[in-house]
Length: 379
Image (cartoon, rainbow, N blue to C red; front, top):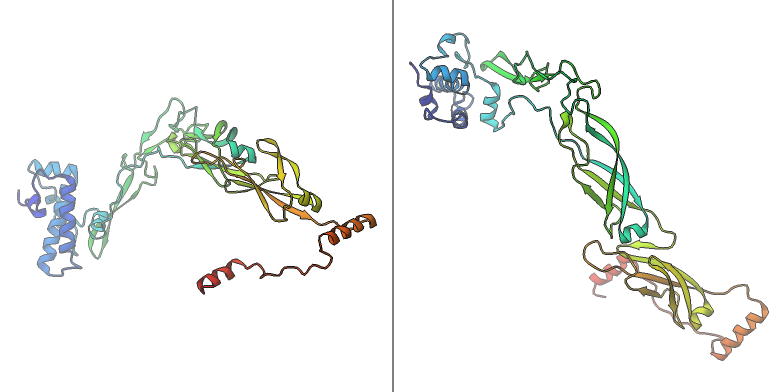
């Protein structure tokens, strides 16, 4: 045996393929002609490239370990440049050595995970407040019942690709300024799968899946809000080749309520009452999410005041309890008074000494940016 290729790469004879590749990468970075143009270094680089080409190929390595030299028969065949007898082997190994990239070799699997899916679900306010269960219709890909995801017609099966012989890639040797370079690319006949399906399934056309509508039951937890997404694991699209299904996301959209406006877990509404009811006090019936209740308007209630009803809002999604139902009071001033009504109001104003009120003036309400400005200025 003329050359000890293990010694050339600096590895033991029982070294693994990973150790051999690491040693080649390290030496290739150190000895590459672009980095070190010395002629002796170029010869050394040619030696490690030949050694790696033999030791990284299981068949050539076996011949070498049995006492043969696979490089001997090809000596002198490469011509000039830096390739020598064996060229640079697989070009991707050189790229790995300099850029640290590792291309995925071997055939691709026909079975892959499916994509996630999402649908929109409209629910009412009371359903989001207390939770509910909904039946939904979903159009997704499912496993083909005819071929069970194999993609081949019944009674047939996938066959090894005769172009790449099951490797999923084909190699091509070209000449460049570096010498003889071997590049690999996915097999054009099997698209990198390593197998071909001569007779595709007539139901799914070889994809291993078909589209179908199915029914699902979704549990909506209490307290969900607009935009909340509920994840249903494994209920999305089945992958090509009958691969595992992705997830299904149900996005909640809460429809507008005719009375209540939701802000977080609190509900808000406005009740409009006449001036006399605000002055004397009254009770106003209100249909809440829990049923009919009476809102107590105390005597002297002013327009703009709010009345909270505790534990009448939306259930907290995390943690116990509920938000509030806040009733905002708006007092209306009577207009188009009849003469008798106008006289009664004048008499009331006279009795309260309010015939010519002076009024109370105060600064107008500031906007948010004005309040922030005053806060920074220490006002």
